[in-house]
Picture 1 (cartoon, helix red, strand yellow):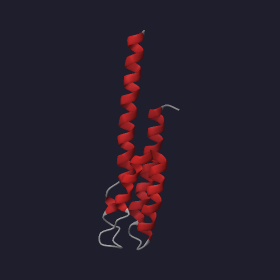
Picture 2 (cartoon, rainbow, N blue to C red):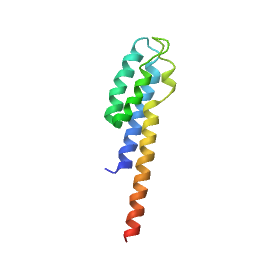
Picture 3 (cartoon, helix red, strand yellow):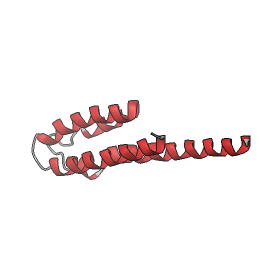
Length: 100
């Protein structure tokens, strides 16, 4: 599987989880627990960059999970990874053209 294809799959997964986070944030107590779970998912998908998801665990004020649901952290991470994958693929293609 190409890196761009893998990044697109991660983007699809991220969109689904961010949509669930948006909906789940309306349920008191569920939002913070789900954000903690999403941090684990983010680290699995994006490595150390997934730790940026931790900002959503810190709800301000406590119990108020509505604000972080409007910022699709996983989707933003996936878009950044997709951009990097496309840059790498383009650089590899340019290198192959130079060699031929």
